[in-house]
Amino acid sequence: MRQRLIPGTSGLVRTMSLLGDPVLHSPCPEVTRFGPDLDRLIEDMFATMYAAEGVGLAANQIGVAQRVFVYDCPDDEENRHVGHVVNPRLVAADGEEFLGPEGCLSLPGLEAGTVRFDHAVVEGVTSDGAPVRIAGTGFFARCLQHECDHLDGTVYADRVTGMRARRLRRAIRKAPWGTGAARG
Image 1 (cartoon, rainbow, N blue to C red):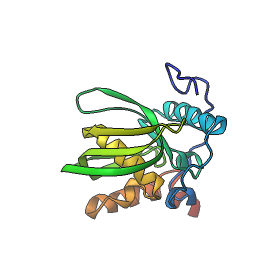
Image 2: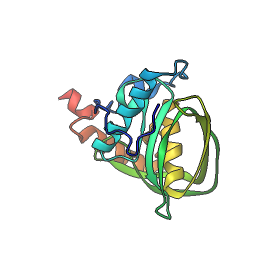
Image 3: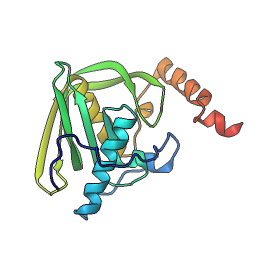
């Protein structure tokens, strides 16, 4: 795939899967077919992430059960990290644990304090099959852990505990897209 200066510029914005969609709650299988379809998926993922004003997006968030995520995320020093990972594996999550605000494009408009490590390392491959290793700290480490969680069938709401979890569940029921809306 030719590298573009700005990923997503030729992609299509796809519909976001919302909390409760089964594709968000099951582990995604690894990508086995590389080529133009994967390149198109990644381009569409960038376009969708940018349109939703996110910093990361996993393939299952647009209904595609494949181990792929994209990111355009700053770290705590405001260094911008942009890229994608196919078949990512979180190989390290360590350092100090921090409680910080976390949101998700699949839970629009909501956020809750979530504990994450301040250092993370993800290994996988690019859309061309080249090995890639991405290390992040601070907010970028949170993003890497969040996106790997998605591909394992976990949303950040699953990690929220105590009073924060109760408040988040209440907010989800009240959200226009939430479980309360389905009950009328």
